Image 1 (cartoon, rainbow, N blue to C red):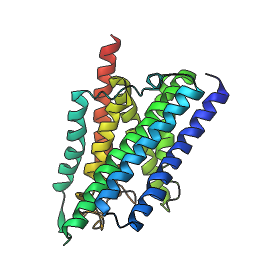
Image 2: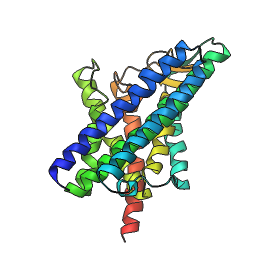
Image 3: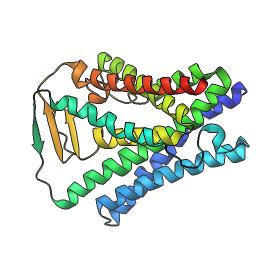
Image 4: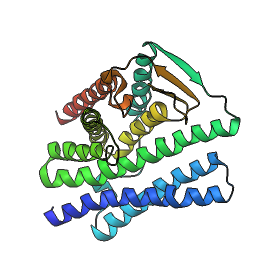
Length: 278
């Protein structure tokens, strides 16, 4: 792949992410709010448009400009392997259970049914399916496969993962320690998603793991952190202030507990890949 084309793919991957986010959450959802549509419904609509608009842009880019099928970039018809569905559930549940053994307290907000439904649908359809599918389509689909063609598998796994991590600190007023923590954890989870996509032969396997992680860890049901989450039905508020356990300013996704989970799943994926290669 020529360097010029590689630069275009990298730049457009970020542009597609921004455009899809703007269309679904910056334009559609505010219009639905103005129209008096219930929050739970516009969260579902926003997530659907987020995924559909990204897919359309990637499809047009691959088929019309690159003149290739989307399968060449790890985005075939949706097929998900059962083992990765199991991992998708076990990983966030296991991390959450570990934290429930640490000193803390539950805080449940006295919310009406409509607000609870809004929080849950936001977690499932926007933070979960929306972010999970869109980010995998771009980072582990279009971007990773393009980099692999240019510089090989190792660079293809690591470089998009570093970019993925860096996007989580842009615009955030984090301390230097928290930024370093996010970069390490974000890169490792990106590597994990990359290995899953490669082992499963498509981004749909990494997307289901990514989506379930977001739904359970940062969704609107129950969240874990050092402060109550005003956008969750229930919060488990940790007493510890150890940045290794709390994940610093970003939260438990960048904690040592989560990192151990990322490494464990990555090891499983590497073992499966080696078995395939043999």
